[in-house]
Length: 451
Ligand SMILES: Cc1cc2nc3c(=O)[nH]c(=O)nc-3n(C[C@H](O)[C@H](O)[C@H](O)COP(=O)(O)OP(=O)(O)OC[C@H]3O[C@@H](n4cnc5c(N)ncnc54)[C@H](O)[C@@H]3O)c2cc1C
Image 1 (spheres, helix red, strand yellow):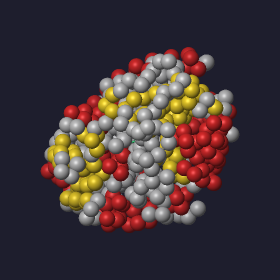
Image 2 (image 1 turned 60 degrees about the vertical axis):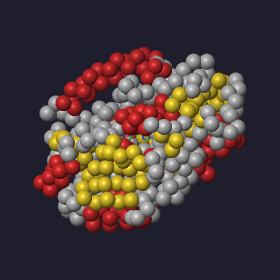
Image 3 (image 1 turned 45 degrees about the vertical axis):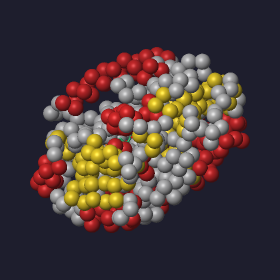
């Protein structure tokens, strides 16, 4: 099947999947993740409607997992026992103009929260490629956007409230709880049930989005740092063919000094003449406005619009974080695999993330570049490719995205996260009997075998 026909069939299947996904969510017999690549091991789901409900559920059950908006591709959220959902707990609890923070219930999604903040003159510093995901689920897996000065979304968290395995309420703040707080924010869902999240706010801002096509890899090799620094947020999309970046997405602030000048050429790439989807064959209708049209931060930072299907739908995703100083070498290492990678790929994206101090953050103490793969939904093929990619990136000690597909061992993870042993100790203290653990977490986080 050629690429055009493949995209057509993908789109039709995606619509079908959307419908069947909505059905499976309601069905008693089948519950899947968003992409439909994972059927969870149980469909038993308890929907809490109050804090008292959450505490009662936690006390009454010996093992369970919390589900957010189900956007992870791997088994991090899976269980064969029972799910707890906080999706109906989605209210703003407090907007504090003095401290410039907002506190929300944990079922809140960015799509719900952002317009509320914008109407009141506030913004979050960054967002992921889509607003559909829950705040608690996103921060738990170190979800990120792009920008050399922008930390991931978990860095916005200044306080957390959670119900721990004993049913007790634990409140942690950045100011008072130092190390424990830094250990808990990217918590992978194993430390407790997050019931409230407090986020830092910035004044609302306006962005313009410009897309350039066909940036030669030679330019990337020579000018990577300049390219990455050229806008508030920069995303590079490539299919790894023809030694070029297919699309460069620049999100520029209208209050930036000096102002970005959208010349027809950008490091050898040409200014696009219409809105584009990162997967060029798909309709840009699902994407946020480009062509330099100014718009509010929450309608430009994500690539995909709320109310529309993000990305391709029927897909898989993987992503690896390497130190930014090795970005070009790492990108060229993947390019060497291009003829193996491209046949299974919908698109790759390269983004920058600022370093932070959250124990299990993929950017822990490391200015980072993330190399992302949106795959066709063919796990047998992708599962063979991932070890090759991980081997190729091994000299740069890659850290995988916690919510996407990877194959590296727990020993490799431990060698790349110096605070992982402390995290395991914290998890064992808060949840001594492993109520919130599952097979995936036992294998990746709690397994103590060495390489
Ligand atoms: C189309 C698409 C685009 C994406 N784009 C990006 C991107 O741009 N950048 C990026 O970094 N990632 C991206 N992701 C990945 C995604 O952001 C993460 O997988 C994120 O974790 C999704 O949040 P969720 O609530 O849907 O996750 P879920 O899969 O529902 O949950 C994730 C984890 O959080 C835990 N959890 C959820 N809520 C709670 C709670 N209240 N208390 C305790 N634990 C909880 C779960 O148990 C699980 O361990 C994308 C995913 C998709 C499908």
